View 1: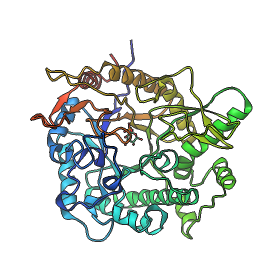
View 2: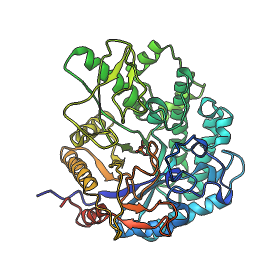
View 3: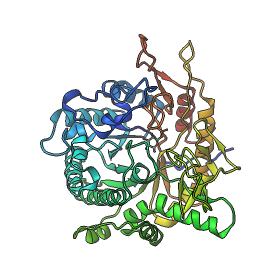
View 4: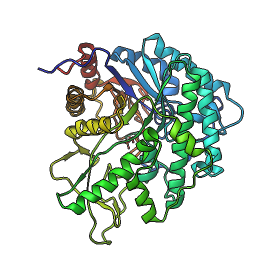
Length: 462
Ligand code: BGP
């Protein structure tokens, strides 16, 4: 029989603004880079409607209360607060999130608020986006506005979702290739923007806590060959540790710096960076975990292919450094992502030993093509199975000494997947997006909803 989780363990569920809200031009909202991103035609539900959470937030939060959540992780759309990225505040945007926050608190659900989840204002992108330093200033002003508006009620903040994935290993999120030098300069600006968020949160939010949100896929060497071990070291450093080392230690790690040197990339630091980066630190780490990755040292340059992201495909390759490898010991989901619950425990232990900070999991889950049955049910036993295995490993990590204080899987309700549109669903709550249907946008509780509800009630796995 499984042991209970610690008494104060936080059970949650997560979403992001642009993947759920829709209402993309309502109440003064400006366009974000996600609104303008080119879409595949097969996506019947685009981000303009998404799950229409903007209009359904009351119903959704009521369902999440029924689920029994302690925590609801959502992001704020920067373009609702500042339609042009900076300048005059859009009061309708401030009001909307006031209502969302108050609705959560009404049910005793703590909001965990992400400042920015992939949706930079298009107006800032037009001025150079994260390539220009002025975007860091705009972000700091935006973060300050949020802390001042909501800091009396929101005590837990997350900075910028997965800068490591958004920029470094995924080609689809921003929908374009960025030249290498520019890419790493953007990365540095994101890192500095986060430092301003730490500083401002600690100054402005009484008892406020804030953490970075990396996507971590632990990297395994394909074999015990020393060269493969080197490949794994480099990919771990670039993909996983570059972000968190900067965030938590205030420096880039030496392997990452060597990688940049070999690539001929030189990050330009502003005068104030050195002091800022060594002065402001997070209170916890919020980790998103889906997969692990396995790499070998590439031996020949041809065969280099065009994988979209390392989570999805082994085709990822950086000549001279690493090449994806199909791990024969791991199963995959229908979207080609490896499933590795044991890897979650190892990741938690590695992370905790490296940074000595409390950890909350803010994403983990199974994307699948769920089917709504004629009687309004969704039998997602595959998701229950996935969650059960991963939550089991969370418990093992806690018992092995990791300070894991919460688990907030992806996603609270169905939303528009970054890579696959609405066809790939993660939610505990099904959102009907069939066309020409009077049930359009209706919500249904999946089998996993009832399973998670039971788990939260008993604070232990069945
Ligand atoms: C993470 C993102 C989420 C979410 C998730 C699943 O990297 O933070 O926004 O989308 O991945 O990815 P996908 O939607 O492609 O299945």
